[in-house]
Length: 114
Length: 114
Image 1 (cartoon, one colour):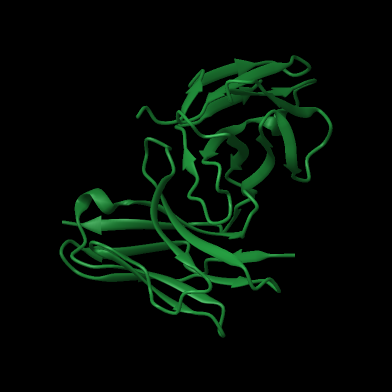
Image 2 (tube, chains in turn red, orange; image 1 turned 90 degrees about the horizontal axis):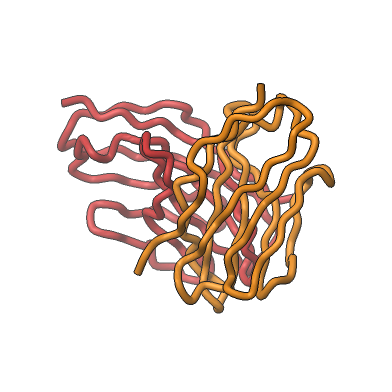
């Protein structure tokens, strides 16, 4: 069974600094996708970034980037120049290609200190 | 385009009752999936519908059911409610190409069972 593990229940960072959230996963599939979602107090899950497993290049979206280590089954999220609006729960998620079932980690609560 | 719309936002029911939640996907999206979010179990996949057919199902009892209409709107029903069904229920939609498609979530329905 596929599993996703986020080992950091909580993280905090000073505004404008950089923070890295960790995620590991376990799968025997070769065709899969990895995601980071953000859930602010409004509760809506917002897609932050997506990584295709077949791509070696790490995905980036503005201040957000990932470090995808396929052999180690590791998928960390780096947030640069942290802003107050980045404060939220962050969930790492996995899905097999062609299926719409997301498997989520337990989440990391990120606090931004002004 | 309007996002994923879930109604109602909040719902209070008593044990033994049944409840129906509604989800309208992004225009043009044909896949709708449902997730349950609780503090103890995290985010868990309930089921997914595509073109009015259930395509994938999570590990939930038969009291949880769903359907999808020809306009892709989906409903989720929970019968004989239990206290443990109290949760945030999230709906997500995605486009026709489900291979690596991004899932877009609504703001959820917060169900409280008393």
